[in-house]
Image (cartoon, rainbow, N blue to C red; front, side):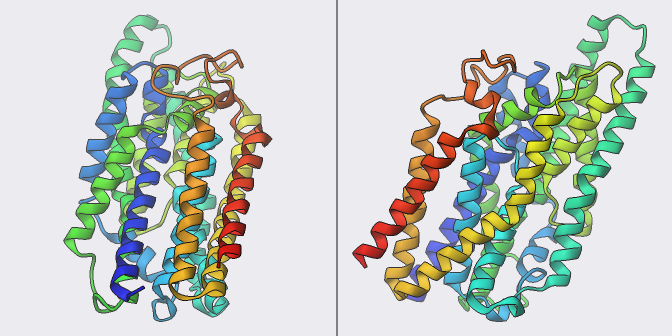
Amino acid sequence: MTETILLVLVVVTALAFDFTNGFHDTGNAMATSIATKALKPKTAVALSAVLNLVGAFLSLAVAATIAKGLVDADVITLPVVFAGLVGGIVWNLVTWLLGIPSSSSHALVGGVIGAVLAAVGTSGVLWSGVLSKVLVPALLAPVIAIGVAAAGTWLVARLTRGLPQDATSRHFRWGQVGSASLVSLAHGTNDAQKSMGIILLALIAGGAVPADSGVPFWVIVSCALAMAVGTYLGGWRVIRTLGKGLVEIDTRQGMSAETSSAAVILLSSHFGFSLSTTHVATGSILGSGVGMPGAKVRWGVAGRMFAAWLLTLPAAGLVGALCHWLESGLGGTAGVLAVTFVLVAVSTAIWLISRRKPVDHTNVNDEWDGTAAAPSAAAPVTDPEAFAAVAAAATTASTKEKVHA
């Protein structure tokens, strides 16, 4: 396989990750608006897609962090980048299947770091950058979001106390349209750039651009479009978990949560932090429950989400490392094709499993009581059958490739 063909494969795979990022993270902006019926489901995802597209053009600080702040570009090769991308995509798809609002950002970072560790060891990772730009924001972001959203919700509840519920719901629904739009715009400024950074890293590794190059315009356009298309398709499983699983939310809470998310995400994008918009959105929704008198927060669901967050970096990193070892073991074109086959096989298996109990715009707002049209979404993190099926598919695909080689 020539260097040019491999570079094209890496770029296409990076855009595929951007696509999964779009449908995985749609709920960060629109779950609460859909849950309160401020927006119809299809209208919400269409609006989010347009604003994600626009937001991708507003800043490049996060792209620079991904491309040059986490791993040593001098030791990066195209197979390493490819293996890291596969790690991120696989974790995104598994968590989407189970309805877990996990971090696409951390899946990508974890996959790349795992592939780098497998290739050159610890010397290839810029640990100070990982700590300051990824791990510290990951710990602080949800805490800050909970605090800001709780304070905002409490204030709104106080100001609207005694007012007719119909009137407040009507006005706050309009407010939610604005706040949800702002979150989508902020999401575009942060998450679309992560694939831009990975593609820039691949272009540098492939010798297509110099090491001090900025992000080419065609990369910005491609990533923006890939994320917008993924957003429009709607990650209904994750939207359901965020909108119905954490808190029974009203329009006042929805607007407070969305405004809090937008503020934290935009601030992090300004400073170039590779922030998880999922962590921020989840923290804001939890904060809206904490700040609303009498609201019920499902801390059990939140606890299982937090556990998945802790697994994201190491799990994606493990997949990235395994893919690199498979590449290296088979060598050359055979290794790259083997990893490509594994990615396609696992993705297909996950999609087929998801069709057993589909979640879409018609049932995303069903009650969170186990009687919904898609009960698997009501308890997404406790479905061992889905976990086992995905793991079996991955193992079978990998084994077949090794035997064939």
